[in-house]
Image 1 (tube, rainbow, N blue to C red):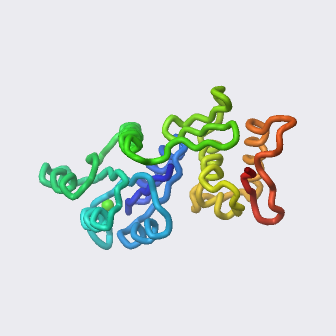
Image 2: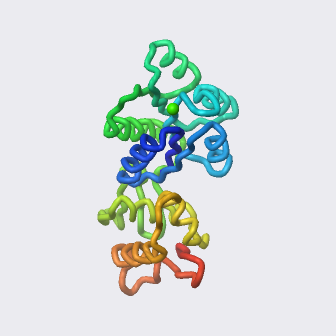
Length: 223
Ligand code: CA
């Protein structure tokens, strides 16, 4: 699941990103209103952590704008403004939760998870099936015929990306951007190492392979 972090303080954004990535979420950071608009226009997210004081505007304006255009995903406001009227305004504009800075990152992750869980009660797909595999995006588990396969957070994010894009050839660049933050220095063969590990963990001897290596490009999840 992908979380958009709209936060102009780099350190804070990184800190939140690391904590979410550790829990197998995919993140994207936007440091201004403009970047946040671009990020959402480019690809949807499943939830958002929204700072209010942004260099080119107010997070509340963004929120109002998005809700008006039908953006339904949960939004958690994270702000240094802790006045009751700010909270009330935020919630009235369609925020689902509000946390004041300074904050506990563990609590933030827990609240994001709970927002996503609540949201999934509606119509969102939170379980992806492929062959005999069942990927639970909220529980962060991968099962084959009811048997749980142990994955690290990063492996989970990687398999999620493939399950979300079955049959599509995913380039190394795209995988790097989605599973590792684009800003990370990514050793070029790191993705190959991870795919190899996933193959070892998931593919069964005697069964057709799960991933196809597309030479010079990337990988594809086979039907
Ligand atoms: Ca700020």
